[in-house]
Image (cartoon, rainbow, N blue to C red; front, side, top):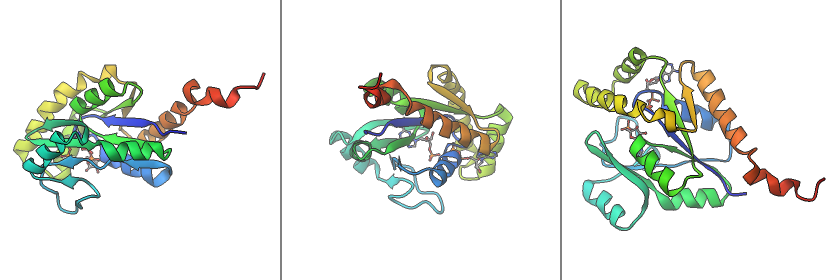
Length: 198
Ligand code: ADP
Ligand code: 5GP
């Protein structure tokens, strides 16, 4: 059975990375799509594990080679999903998790409408600010740009297939697991299994 693609989108600092990490600790048969980016690595980030860190020129070469399923500019840097690895993982029967921002999510939705879109929201605006500042990975100026972007991102949430509110991490991960499980009970996947019964 071919795997499905799950798009995890939502404002910076909401906890997408944290939730995803916990999901991978609990569940097998998942593939995390390692994105390419022109952003500089944060302390502890490893090339090829957290991102493929590329120069602007290298990123443009990937674009020209049509290597991305989607790509977008976000707060001064480019980000993109390498297509090949996503397709290979799905062919192996693994579910693919894309942690991407909303312009990229929109592109994937247009190209592959069967991909499932999950919007991760914070319990409050204050908590989002608190998390983004508390993470301490961006300058205050970049934090402000990311928060400005978050305002736009919220307006897309109602179009998503699911909204998960990351208040308690435990509850958010449980909801994500429930969504994955439910999506595998859909008739497009199950109907062949019941053919000939009844
Ligand atoms: P994103 O990947 O969406 O940018 P992160 O996963 O890096 O966000 O999380 C941003 C910050 O919020 C991190 O410091 C993380 O530890 C914290 N965080 C994530 N989820 C929760 C939660 N449920 N409750 C409290 N803090 C959280
Ligand atoms: P960060 O710089 O905090 O790692 O990521 C910034 C934003 O870029 C986040 O919203 C993250 O989901 C998004 N992002 C990460 N990889 C990709 C990608 O391949 N494509 C797109 N469109 N966004 C991405």
